[in-house]
Amino acid sequence: MASRTSRGERVTVATLGGEQAQLGTPDGGGRTIETDIPSRLDRLPWARFHWMIVLGLGTAWVLDGLEVNVVGSISSRLGEHGAGAGLTLSQISGWGASIYIGGACVGALVFGQLTDRFGRKRLFMLTLAIYLLGTLLTAASFSPAWFFVVRAITGMGIGGEYSAINSAIDELIPAHHRGRVDVTINGSYWVGGIGGPLLAVLMLNTNIFPTDLGWRFSFVLGAVIGLAVLLVRRNVPESPRWLFIHGREREAERIVQGIEAQVEEQTSEKLAEPEGEPITVHQRRTIPLPTIIRSVVTMYPRRSILGLALFIGQAFLYNSVIFGFANLLSLYFHTPSGSVPYYLAVFGAGNFAGALLLSPLFDIVGRKPMIAGTYILSGVLLIGTGLLFKQHQLTATTFTACTCAVFFFASAGASAAYLTVSEIFPMETRALCIAVFYAVGTGIGGVIGPQVFSRMINTDSYEQVFLALVLGAVMMIIGGVAELLFGVRAERRSLESIARPLTAAGPLSSTDRVLSSV
Image (cartoon, rainbow, N blue to C red):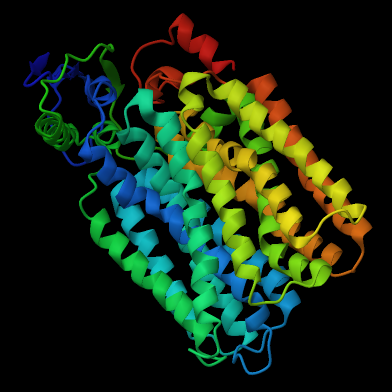
């Protein structure tokens, strides 16, 4: 057996079949290595390097929030005569929303599998480029058919981003910061949710931009922001965890040594020795999709139910309300189209505040009480809002205030759904699991939700809107109950201790068997 060490490194190459396996061969097949890279990454103190990860990767949600809320804010303008797109309000909030979400589901599934196979970095660069293309093409929309096609392309880029980005973030951020960072980053969707409406205020001003150009510039500016993010993202490294499993442990070692050197320089402190045990893995260049699916379903059935419940609940609630919020204000509170973006900006601020302020508690109090609490409480508050709405007790201002209170908690819970699926399944399946649960949950809640909700609010019936809000609330409460029943206490634990890698060598320990059953 051959081994080598440097700067805390521990990599051992096993002898197989009477011959010593060779390090660094392209396919990585047949080799067994022992490495302490996960524990070295998890013991790092917070440094500027981690802020670069947040900036380069976390901005994906800002772009998605900008995209969705720009469309929501300018929907009334897009449906006006002379806008140049030939769309109606119902087409924008109904089919336009569903097609965007449908594209995101397809993109998540396609690029999620590719992310696990070809690496995090290649895919988070590619998916952002697809988003940029779709956004620019949206700005050039001239007919409903064109608008729907390019919205699907844009959605595919964003859906792919979810898989690649969440995987990379969780594999690069230290365990004791993972919960608050992931929840905050996913909640940063609402930074775009604030910026989108405010951008629309400027672009919808016909004293500055003609009716058929202002809304187009909104999408162009979104693409410009995406291009800036692409430039920052070039500096984000590939996940060392992905590299050492796929036969590229030398590259993984170089990256980790570079990160350690940066952190020591940035913090002016010598790093402590890693505390965790090294991990032994059988390297594989690729893992067949049937193997991944079979492993997830058979090893973690309760976790699979949990992931579906969390994603369906938050997707149904959010995609129903977001895509119909502007129309609801216009139809029931007679809010002028020029004022709608201000209400949406306030709504977005409430969402981001919830994710930002509650995120530390996911590491301190724990995943299970926080996820269950935010899901159930937001559902109960939404039912109360619906009752007040049904009884004509709300104005546009008080309705927005009530929804801010609801989504203060809902945004933290919804963000934690991505965190949950990312950390409770084996590393080799991480991106694909995010993709599958996002696609299934969003396919049910995100495609059906806008269709149902848009029809209900366009009936001019307070009773129908109340029922739509109750439906979204019930789906969130079900997600909270699922967390109580099947939730995993993952706070401050390494990813490998939460879900043992499929390529890990040796029999399951008693701890692994317990973890696999929950």
